[in-house]
Length: 407
Image (cartoon, rainbow, N blue to C red; front, side, top):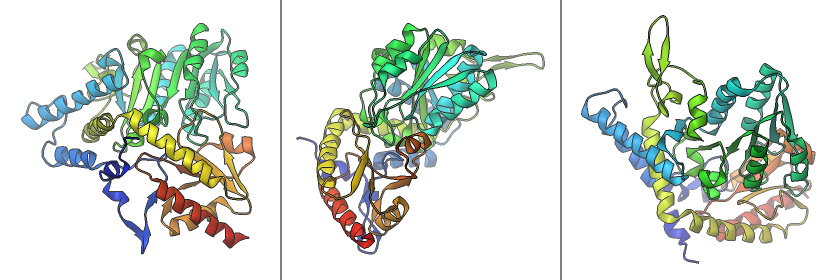
């Protein structure tokens, strides 16, 4: 294939280091956060060191330049996910804030006692708790789509859960623990047949899947910048304009204000209505650099290499006696969650770290998935296009070595 992993990797100097003496870093914690290419850190540094002026309200040159750069990223994101209008792109702190925004604002507008909200059993906590709290406030009911032992949603059950009481369906594009890419087109279509709104949690999907919000016809799509090589504390909420216009503000203050008297306050138009206070503009501009980086290499090329790595990794790791994988859907991103008989996940993660491997262990912010498999925790290796087959070979050898320590 044409993807040059070493050239791609050269943009990430953090990967070229000894994390411990004579132990090179192998970074497999990409579902938690991705590393940042030089162009992102250089962009953020430039705007912090040379162009730092608070956006939208300043009349001086730096404020104007920062405002232009910030708004240019909005246009860039609009194109990246094929939104119909730049007014549909709301900048947030990340996926979690985006979901909370919708749960609070849309929930205030449309949820009443007796209504129902549907999530799935494979959601991370950030796409469960806001809906759970909304249901508690409003006297609504939270319903759950189960998944089978391969880690695939049980769609026949989903259809049976839908009713005229269903007001919101919120599911992830791809699971952060199982790696499953969900059939969100089908889920959206069925929810809309019942008149329900649909939010897609794209925390994992944005870096690994095609995202065309108009083609999907989702009402909301949320993702974090740091999962797609951008800075932490950045995120995007896409929402259909006609729905966002009806929703009340989530937080108040700053640019989201139009006028204030002690009698009444009026609010700004979209997208500013949902961007209170001073935005994290330098990092949002860095997010623009990250998206430009992805577009330069092409998401399809990056995903193709990641899929090749994933197949290689599964083939290699399957040779380890006593290994058990969680999430074996045919349609997956490069996330490998596993356990090895006789080895506690915490011990494994700690010892892997000593050998230079950064993996995630524990409950992965998905207690319902742990309960489904009756596990106290798992070990997760999440791949990125900057990973190599040589790193996977080294990981395989490390696991064998550590397994022997516990036999």
